[in-house]
Length: 446
Image (cartoon, rainbow, N blue to C red; front, top):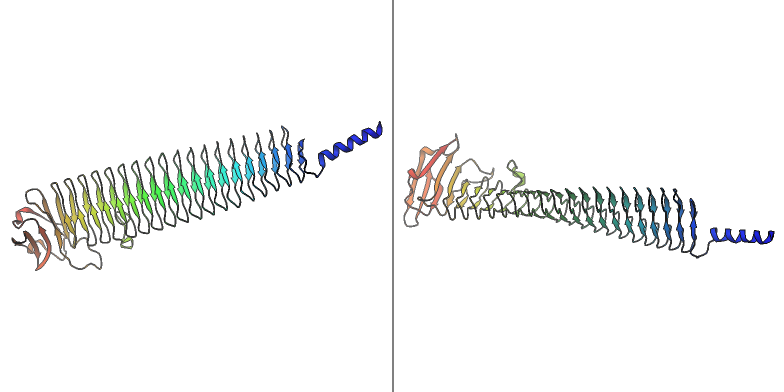
């Protein structure tokens, strides 16, 4: 009988600590698997579990567990507690479940799920899937073409290298694309999206979002809410969508659309195309009102529907007011101003061409005030002036090169126009009437 008892004890010891490929269920505070395919289950306390080689199934149960799945295609569930899980090499499925968990995918194509709690998920190399689920989570894709989903909570998602897809989910999230051509979607909540390097696509979603394209040819979509979009470097396409948006193109030849809402749109450096869309919008061709000549570009600005403000700044720009009672300001360069429908205010300077379009329009010509440093003396042109419907104001700069006292009107009946001449130089050609007189003109010196 003593021999039989000793034999049974030896067999039990071999069953627990053996190195075969058998599937074993082991309950312990500290346990090791085998080189085979193991099923390991911890206790209600904090366990230390090593799966080693093989395709293992590991469950930590309650407690703050440390689980190293080892090599192989493993399935790990930390269960309750603040767990630390490492997948090791292989195609692993790692779940933290409840608690504030740290999950490392390591090598292989891994799927990481944080579960409830504030979790940290690190994908490692290869193409990984990271899901934060509920809680305030930190997701790091690292290398590879990763998919990151923050789920609920205020999450931070870092794509890292590769062509990544980042989904913020609900909550106020921060999404960083990293290197590569990434897709970032903020989802519900007030989100911050950074495309960084690469040709990225950023979509804000609901609420008031902030989007930075970074370097590359990026597409930025504000979505609902009052959004702020910054194209930064590269030839970018930016659309505010619904809401009162602020959009800045940055360097490069950008395409900017405000869409619905009362938007603030600024092209900045490069040859930009800016569309206001619906709403009462403010459009700048080059940066903003105080932009300098280093942001020069030949821009196209279209106000769309609404009562819009279009400002060309530097460069030879084209401004189209479209529908509504619009205000167009040519400033520096040889600009083309088209009021379109509505009662518009068009202000130009040396070398500009102004067309009021339909409606009762007001034309203002500012002589010598708005001129680029290398701009030569060129006459301005009003193409469709009507003395019965439109008004004309000539502004002379105090102490400037031209004086209103020397102003002369030279009519051309055959071509139905009047030339306004100062000191022998034609400063303005007014087309549409040959009967214009000084009584039809307001002259201002300031």
